[in-house]
Length: 424
Image 1 (cartoon, one colour):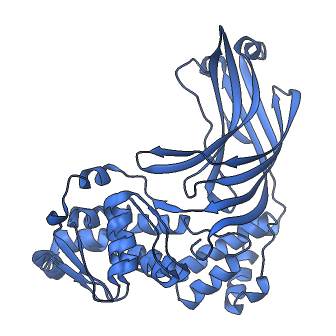
Image 2 (cartoon, rainbow, N blue to C red):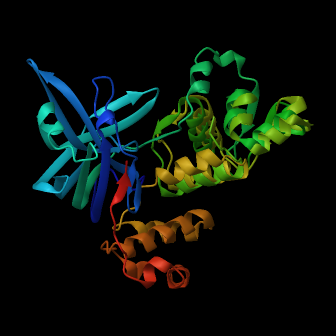
């Protein structure tokens, strides 16, 4: 995450068991390349895999292939190692052992995705048809292990909803109609629309004519301008390059949580869309909504501006230190920005090698939600026997919480039974 730069080593291995039953009529017809559902790499939810099939013309013959599709939307590249066995209708098992560096980046409506394919089977389409069973179906089975070796720590934070970002491209800076005063006194101009779109807190503020909505100004004293600016960048641009340290990252999450930024988008609508707090402010004509101004004395201008940028653009470049990042989370929490909070969580680069360090940090900063997130992840790591480093530095209170929760975890009490992921 923010405390590490460049390559992050992981070396986490997990089992893979997939089965895909395909009807003859569902096979590639030249117009689509079907995929199974996405499955998460255990303990690393942002890394996903699936099976795909498709065809292409080679001279006059149509060829067909099956592939293992790997992707993530939080970094530009990652390294995987596979040790797999692939079969079609239980015949002729094929062994596949390969290392893959995924560096391809797709830009899709503002979403940056690194993806790669591992070929499993390629032949003429007519050869594939010969594999059909008596039910005119093909059953694919894939078993073995996937190992996430490492990834490049060039992370971006982004959201799935892009419509506001395109709308805001047409809005000039002079049209910004709301001011957020951060903890460091910096005044950050934003569109209410961007805040409204990301924060339920801001939506309430504007729709209910809270004092801040009336004045067009809110003071956020508990978050720095860096954290707020990062959150705002996410509201606007849908993704952001992270330049926050650990504490700033926590602040970012707390900011999104505080302001109920469910989608993370600032215009009254921008704040309203992202924050339940701003929604109440605007809808109920709070003083801030009437004045078109809210004072936020507990957050710096940097944090507020970042949050606002997120509201508008749906992405933002990381430029926050550790404390500012935590402040950004606290800001999102204060203004009920749920989607921003989830986005912050997903962009936290927890690995077996650093999770104890981050758990201690969140504990020290009293960020309970992120601490619980670490504990949940630790339980997953233990389930899959990932080698967790530096358990000895873990705060004793955290250890107690971990063992209390692990003791009631069904998965920790019995051997994990693996079965094929079914697709049809």
